[in-house]
Length: 309
Ligand code: NAP
Picture 1 (tube, helix red, strand yellow):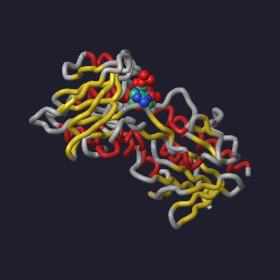
Picture 2 (cartoon, helix red, strand yellow; picture 1 turned 90 degrees about the vertical axis):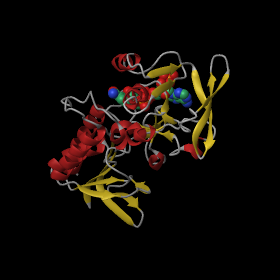
Picture 3 (cartoon, protein in one colour; picture 1 turned 60 degrees about the horizontal axis):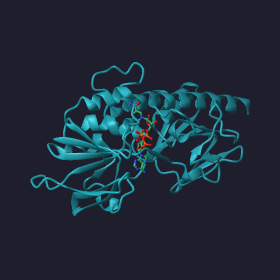
Picture 4 (cartoon, helix red, strand yellow; picture 1 turned 60 degrees about the vertical axis):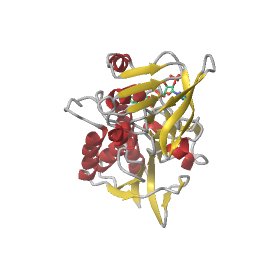
């Protein structure tokens, strides 16, 4: 029986593991893939306080967080949670072939990239379409790439992609970016970055790899075909259209708002002993620092709950 099971090892889950381990709670941290969640595929971290290390990336930051969680004794399991039973005093979390029990659960399952939503998208994911510039920019060295979206992630990753690609074009559905002004300024000052405004991607195509797409101007409905350069024979399309919450497991168990878990400011979900932290919560600012803060609060509240019972 664990004191706390934390589901998800992004910044929220890892911070919760650090605080829970340090409070000497018997802690299990379950992650289905690699640690870090979305931040693991972020090329540059500029706004995490104290994060002034040269070349700090999501990977470097997260690997130090993982090491810190291990140092405080959190046990680790890499497996996919299939179901949860969160109602009673003993909570159960089930992975293929194994069931774990705990007095408390912290849900830190985060969010995932929203698909581009165009025709043929699935056929070209990994064949030109990517949701991770850090992972895939290198495939497009000296080639042309497109970035769909206009938020912080789209514009920041467009700037990162200019280190690899010959030309980067941001396709955004409005004529104004949502990204923070400082990020916008970097992009506007970068000669390699061009913008296609008021447009969305309707369809993608190619012979095995992506080399053609059709975009639609949302104001005029005009369709424009974009073809890969003859020498390149392929172009990249990076999707940064926001996030979708990873909450399917909790649909029947917890109160959700548009798929996000509602909590109070102590990260309590309303079910005794069940907390949520990070991007999976209903909140106004989804950042590494707010995820880390949530994780710390959730672990301290879990510790209080365990000592009260
Ligand atoms: P976001 O801020 O939600 O931006 C999503 C972008 O995609 C918006 O520009 C939106 O257009 C566009 N979009 C959404 N649905 C679309 C659709 N169906 N078709 C076409 N365009 C669509 O998402 P994000 O940039 O991934 O960021 C997610 C969170 O992480 C945010 O809270 C962000 O602040 C944070 N973040 C922060 C940093 C940083 O601080 N350095 C870096 C990365 C991410 P509209 O603008 O028209 O709505």
